Image 1 (cartoon, rainbow, N blue to C red):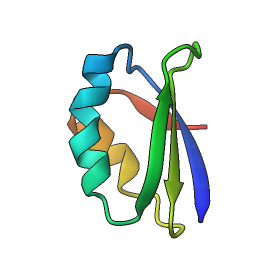
Image 2 (spheres, rainbow, N blue to C red; image 1 turned 120 degrees about the vertical axis):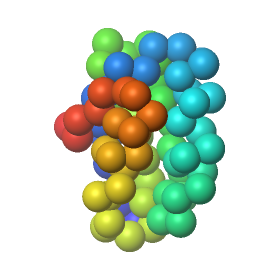
Image 3 (spheres, rainbow, N blue to C red; image 1 turned 90 degrees about the vertical axis):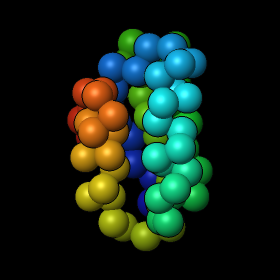
Length: 69
């Protein structure tokens, strides 16, 4: 398992509700959380493998900015 952190422009619970179905549907995502209190709105994702290639396009496809830290 690996943990990957991303800087995002998520800013509220509505944003989190928007990304929830997409992240929950991903087979290799075990757990994820967003720290809205951090200035970079950190999305932390625990993956059960090292395939993190789908995270960025998935979140960008929902209209948000995201970059790996």
